[in-house]
Image (cartoon, rainbow, N blue to C red; front, side):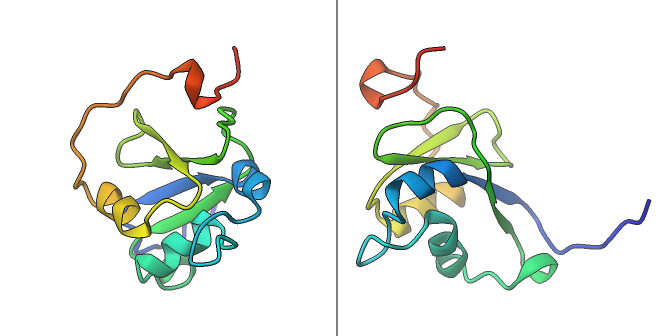
Length: 115
């Protein structure tokens, strides 16, 4: 096995299926995918040279309506539902630890699939 060095101090997982359903859903024209918008807002470099990784994964299985599921790997017990068109500044503040509120339990109104 070969090990590669990375500068990542953390990572964020973004559901690719949710992003695809919204056809972007973020940015000024609401056409930018959340992962791309986060990379730009956080000022990240490419690949392993970045301070943090934003990784778009296949599907996280929550599937909310009009939102994208996002997980900050520093807080894996808190999965965030980011509504389409959400303010990128608020998202970045939450990722940097500005929101210390406890996670709320899922609600039926959030459009979650029944298990």
